Length: 221
Ligand code: DX5
Ligand code: ZN
Image (cartoon, rainbow, N blue to C red; front, side, top):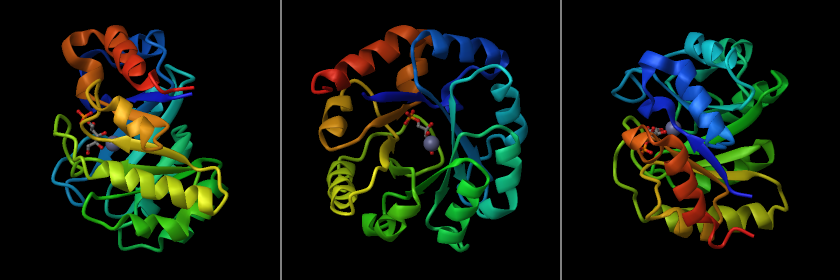
């Protein structure tokens, strides 16, 4: 089954609890939370405190995407906040395999991701340590950007490698996802669709989630 992960970067932060309720009612599986530090990416968003507040309002899977330079330093904070899946970038100047092992030891699922310009092969040796592999289909840092079509080939290559290694790693995609490309990315092997602007557009969350799911689901069986 395809999973939809609304990115709260596009949510209305005046009424966070209400946004969580609407996302639950829309039938989304994950809540995708983008953590940016103004250093790894130019933008700053929010930290573990906000993740913890959201945790108190929902049992949905909290899928936390760290776009920060020193993930190791904050790993425990995100575990304590109630994170279910913690995803780090392979470009950070830290020992990524060790980070992934620490994430699992802290009872979270481990995810890894990479910028669109980083070769997809960077994920291959990490796969045995991963529960989730995230393909960035835009340059990380901002919502509302256009989907990069080269991501489809990257998804296919990743899928083939997961099959080759006989592993069970979920493939997620993030950036510019909507009804126009949901079908293509699923066909390329993606199981989790992150969508920010396409979900929160006009506040019609349930309608938007359903439209994305239907577009994806044309081959979802
Ligand atoms: C970008 C973030 C995304 C972003 C996606 O750096 O990782 O999660 O919110 O937004 P849309 O779906 O609008 O491209
Ligand atoms: Zn993200």
